[in-house]
Length: 71
Image: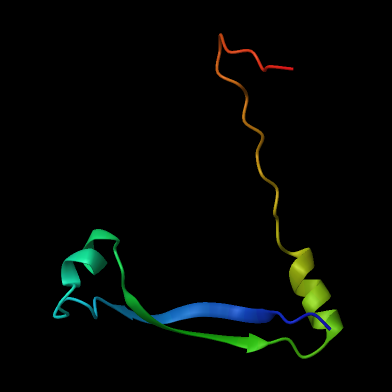
């Protein structure tokens, strides 16, 4: 069975690094502390149904005008 999780959600977020000695580094990268929750799938059928609802299509990018791809 796949080791997946369903219902992932962030339940709390806060700037927990503001009083830390290296707070500047955390702020520079937008670092936040979070709590999250999710649940493990109960069976393979539930995992397959959840995966069927996902779209993982990546749009293709057209080359910029005037640029040719090298062989």
